[in-house]
Image (cartoon, rainbow, N blue to C red):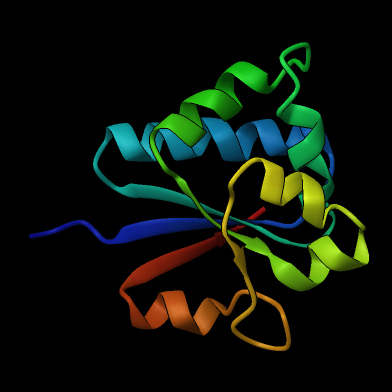
Length: 117
């Protein structure tokens, strides 16, 4: 029996919450249970912060990036929060299936189980 794929939708912009997104994504990936990440809402503001080498989440962020686990960053929220350039500079995919936002239904139809943070 194949385990279902997990995708983590991160909405909160609190680094102490986001650390759990990164850690769980890495653990799920290691356990072959998915662990892909969609960055939504105020969490899009974290991209520019955690990409800096001095940020306490940078090491986990780099591991997640190296494994290709960030599959989408909200296009609409990035524009609204004025961080589109930072997201693009990191080479992360800006996605906007529904009114500029990533669609949970899109991932559910692809066989993912959605977990929100």
